[in-house]
Length: 162
Image (cartoon, rainbow, N blue to C red):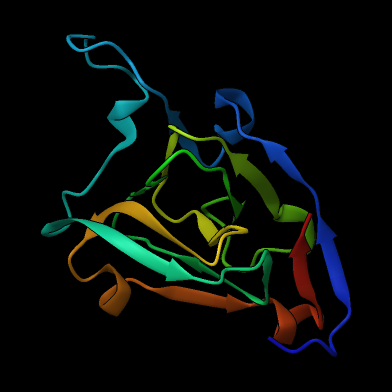
């Protein structure tokens, strides 16, 4: 990350089903035996072999110059532990997100998100030195389905999530 680029500030909102709907769904605890819900229906790992794993990340300050999307799968993320984290997103269906397309969300403890196929994203970001996340995607998502867009090249900025 180059600190010499001007900062574009992005204010994070607390995630709700309504404000996250253009990007996917949120999942919160429900009683065992609860019938299948429409929120769960967006999950799509039919394009390959599902990969469900614990992803360990170190030092993810809320700043980025690149967003990524996966066109072949949804992606589900949830922090391990009772901690809040942040993610930045832009809608699926656009080839080059603008700075105005970006939104940031604070994800409270015990909440997961499933991003729609093609949703641009950066993060997760967090204040702790390291965190673990439950991640559900495809086994080759980060090899064959990892499409990037450089905001620093396109707009000459780094994005800072507040």
